[in-house]
Image 1: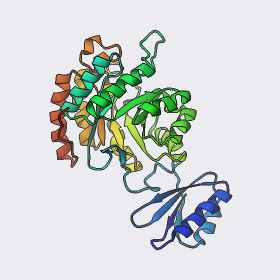
Image 2: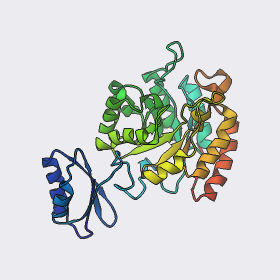
Image 3: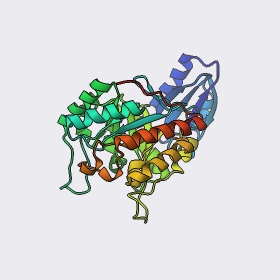
Length: 343
């Protein structure tokens, strides 16, 4: 349930509600809006609680929420969450473009790619130092050495970094280097990992699981939010269906569905969503038109020689061509894309 405070409620009255909930073994999560405060109640509630809370000073209304996810719902927070990463805003009317290689291979590869994507208009740099692989014989990343290479790219370009964490034990290490922590599709329901990244105060991007429903995805986001980390970004990256021509089936409808159900920003990843580089541009543009807050694109200086996911990676030239189209589509749906700055 959520507790809606009156417009003239005091800080003391809000704190009394929070203390009352704590005494009942419940968690109260405060969302302070422009006009009033809203408190999300998480835990096992009982029918009489609604009436009891409505009798307390400063409370205007108590509304039960039928959906199992609370903190990620629009009932709890009607206004959009905007996640700030340096001077980059994820959510709102600014379209963020995240780009870079699937895997970190060499310093030259990483730095040259970061410079190229920034010059084309990207605002966040991606790269994997720890790689989950279906086969144990595939490339699994360079570990901390790869994180150091990513840091060099950030130093050269000023682009904030996003990189994936695989285990709870690696969260502190990743947080030391990354500006945004990515939880991949295979770990969407690794609840211990979700708790751990929730305890950090770094922005977290949560990818949709390979076969996850919308509700399961939002419930996974709930784990992070419930730990007090409100800087959560969702990422649609395709789901597994009976179709085998593409790597996954890119669920374009998930974008407006999430925007209806949740206040969290949503990023589209057409690279993993399709697995084929020539499908990435049209699906990226479709995602922008559908209302995505950003896109994440894999870019490599030589995709044919990439150690991971070369088939879905764009060349520098192809990425630059896509960016010119993204600017046009974004403008048509009321989104702003930053003018590329010199590296």
